[in-house]
Image (tube, rainbow over all chains, first blue to last red; front, side):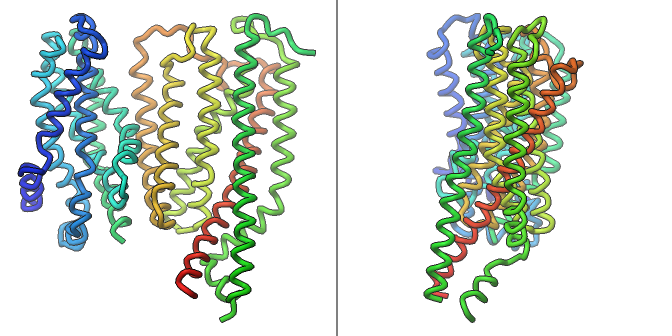
Length: 218
Length: 52
Length: 250
């Protein structure tokens, strides 16, 4: 299992592996927000938590199709399916690798981007906490979507269409935590819901993802 | 005959119009595709009966 | 082997044939029943019911909005059940019924959205408002689209049936989660009265009976459409199989 994880991490981190693209996208989108809504600080401060959440979510989405496609193309996925490791574990490792190389960097970058959007002081902590709790769900759900579309030639757009509605609960509660935290309101309820969704997704979705992969590998 | 819809005439009529239109489109398209497929199946089965 | 023997071998299950012959007989009843109920219900509701004290004539929209909204959700539930039947028992007719039902669900959701938005316009002053109920239907619409898109994208019918079934399962869980999330998300905003006069509310008899007739009409229309469309899907699948054998030179 560790071997698989380190292999995926190495693949993602080497040149051409796409590491950093998610971060770059996150940065670019954040920069474009004031261009589209205007530079008034008060407006930016209000929308900052939500917009940063959306930017992080989209950055996660964009790196999903590489998740399984490369292994599918060169046949490693078939090998992994026949390996002694259960496919559910393989899929979980892939999601973990995705989170470590995409989600986690986004979480760490978010405060810096919050500065660009005049995120209010108390908001930083809550933005980071909500993203930390929410991005694993994004990775796990995204892995499910990637498994569904792994054989398809132009699967990228379809992947987005399938995954974005599944992201809605995490986005709603995650952004709610960030928004409430930014204005000093109580964040307990959305935080619990967010954590619950992530926990459930991480525990249960790998079974669905593995089932779907088995179908596609037939 | 037509009930007095008051100031809501446009509202109610557009709601009814849109809904009925959508239903008619759905039924029409379903029937059209259904006829097409049924005809194609007759053709294919006939061809295979001749050749098989 | 003669052609008829080969043809019968292509029918992998007795089910599709039995399905087609049975539905051929009952379909006309459902079409006529649907038309009758819809005509009676809508005409009665539109021409012969009074206005609502608060909402005026717009209350007449319930005769389309409520049945459509109910169907939008019930059709997804039907797809969930037929997907499970496919996954467990591998009845092709079940998988194809889910595929056939989805576009009907889309249209019902669209009608629910359109009538809901139009109904809300006098109340909210805008053509669209992020009312929790409308928003939930919008999300449901997206789930339907994804489901249909996945069916269209995959070539192999069995693979498509499997993948879309799992998507329907997972999607259902997230659709329910979204419902709660959206309610939570919009609870703080004062949007004014949300769409009332729901089927759960205290609806006076004078509105209730024509509404029931309309609901019955929508249900019968759905049954007619899904039986007919499933027949189309069964035939389309058979054509594909026959053409494949033809190419192989069977």
